[in-house]
Amino acid sequence: MRGLPRLIATVLPIAALALHAGATHAAEPTLGIHIHSDMAMFQVLISPGKTGNDSIVLQLMNGDGTLLQARAATLVLTRLEGGAEPISRKAELGGDHYWHVENVPITVAGRWRVRIEAATLFKTIALEEDFDLPAQ
Ligand SMILES: [Cu+2]
Image 1 (cartoon, rainbow, N blue to C red):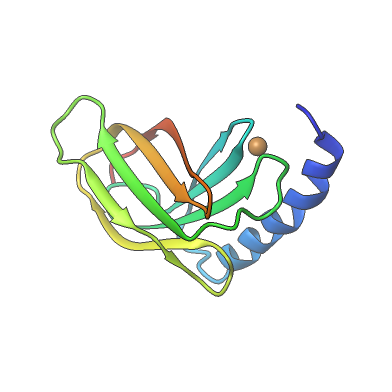
Image 2 (cartoon, rainbow, N blue to C red):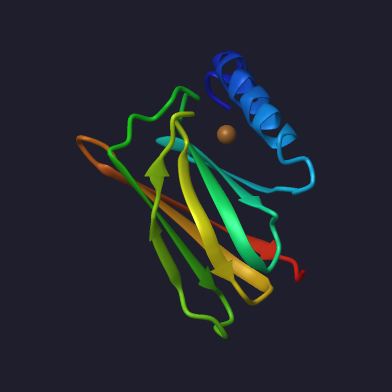
């Protein structure tokens, strides 16, 4: 991993922040998905991380772990085997510098693909990753 020392130095405070935020909702476990490319590093936190109404936090960072200055962020969820309509939502920037999507009805468990599109001044960065969503 290129620039590892800096990555650790910059990501740790964010992780600590996320843990701190999580502490206020201790009853809700979180499903974390980490997507990393040369261009960007996106952390997707899904609470409670199972079927039902989920809240999703997008932590958008540059490849070096610094905060990505995005102007807009979109979340797209697709169930790989079908059986559910794709979900596309605009995220809202919170005071915590993370992007939030509340009350996402994910009704079917199984293998899903999450795609994050982050629009910056100059380009749109899209990263995606597959994950398993457990039933309630
Ligand atoms: Cu990473």
